[in-house]
Image 1 (cartoon, rainbow, N blue to C red):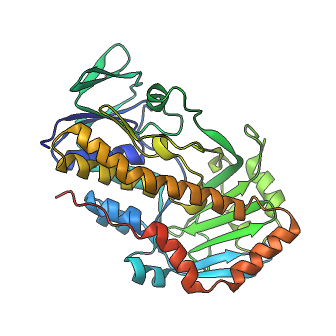
Image 2 (image 1 turned 45 degrees about the vertical axis):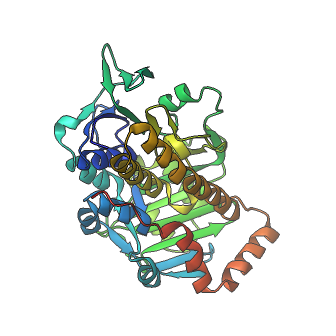
Length: 386
């Protein structure tokens, strides 16, 4: 269909990507973001081949690759440093065309912002209820005003107010039972691998190397929702002081104030649809998942390209959104289930026998089989935007 007018609620990675896709296919887009500054503060993002292919279709893949670092050498270890599985990033690259890459979230966010006209970004504005005022118009209420459009894209995150209005009986996000603490080191760290994941009893620690020599690290712990530490970095040093290097080195290279602590929530009850009327749900608003597969951002990018392509090809918005829902809901909800299962096999295991059985199974799994498991999620081809 010929481009119309769209309002994207939420200026995170998924929302900006959707706005870029719509803009590239002829839509007049406004991104409404409540934060006063669009800097998307955070640590880093892992992008697999599916996410990179989506970025290529949006026209920003080249810039992202220049700012990112490929993850070629690494794997999974025990706290003592014993390898459970090694992952060959070059074999993955041969299979799907790209290795997993790591990029600071703020850098990715900046590159996405730069791909949109400045006037398309309305920051510091709180979006209120979304309502369809007539068959062809949907309205987003703002502070004291409103925006009317042919389409609204709800990319307002896991606690989406738009989703709550569209599905008032849905239970919403639930706590996964875990929390993640993460940061980017203040200075470069001497690393022998590009990425590592270490599974202990009831804890996980991982890192990815960044292009400038620094690293992003994360620790996942089974903690009740709302748990906070007076000094998070000191707590992590206490918990991980006897784990293999470079884990203590990564913590030593981190400023205490840089540590982020988030409870991990997910949409455990799948939504019955990703579109209602002329409103589409995207990213965490549609399928918030645990981070165990590193697919959250990639799935939002897939959403963005699929939505833009459906709107470009269909004769009307309703037909396009039905196609978007049919293509995205099965895949993204399957990835969310797989991410939840991966968490159960990782940091959520604490009994010695269960940990020993998992470790033995991982050591006996051929590397080719491990690559095939990854390909289930990474090997996705985007629709063309023209």
